[in-house]
Length: 156
Length: 198
Image (tube, rainbow over all chains, first blue to last red; front, side):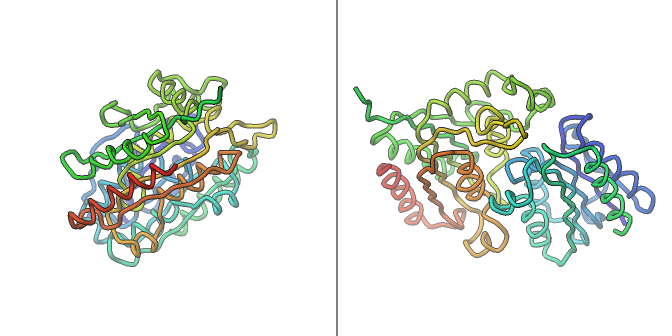
């Protein structure tokens, strides 16, 4: 598959950057991968119509997408390409526990998992790989999550 | 002597210039000026930077998370306010990025919440009323099918950071781009009258 990985965290020392390198490493074994970091924007090389899968790696802020990812989404929604999109994967970290996110709305999750397929007008599968409660997490939990990311992406 | 006039902060982000949406800002101000001392922040005029910078993120979990003078100024305005009203277009189920960027950069530790000794969030906003005034680029059905992101972030996420249950106001117009002139003027006057009752 042609996979476009979109990452969006300002800090190289963040857990998000670590997870993104795990994702790039795993996906690179079997797929054609292009990576865009929204904090170091470079033009996208793969034409939208050739993109088979989108993989987002980002921190959830205020139950939603970081503003930089919101900007990208605006461009995505304005584009007529992406007719061949078959998969959307979101890998994200949350500061707060899962139940809090259930209560306050999961806006980022809904928009990526349901909104994107709706926008491209086709049934593409979506997969949510989320880490909750990162503010209170242990190194073991984070390690376990990295492993989960690897296993899920291996089956993509 | 008790001062009965309350302080209102309006954050406005109608980003399509030369459209009728720009008039929403005036309607918000006109409505709130009844009973409020109003402070307006127009994010586009201000030249608000949408994204949280690496330096800001690095400072986020420190004692002094606010480092940009523009952000520090916004924080002092939020702290002075009794009423907070956000006006913005909703596109693709979400508040437009510049509005979300205001949340990301201003509603930080020490402002919206604090961490207790167990790294749990404690609400920290002292607001009596919160509100949103938005236009949608789609129908009510289409919004409901996926998510009403702006409404959730303001009426739920923001609210969760206010210890004393605030009054909540939500004023919106669906299918705003296709709306007829009479629908628009009806919405403008609804915004003004509703906010005048706060």
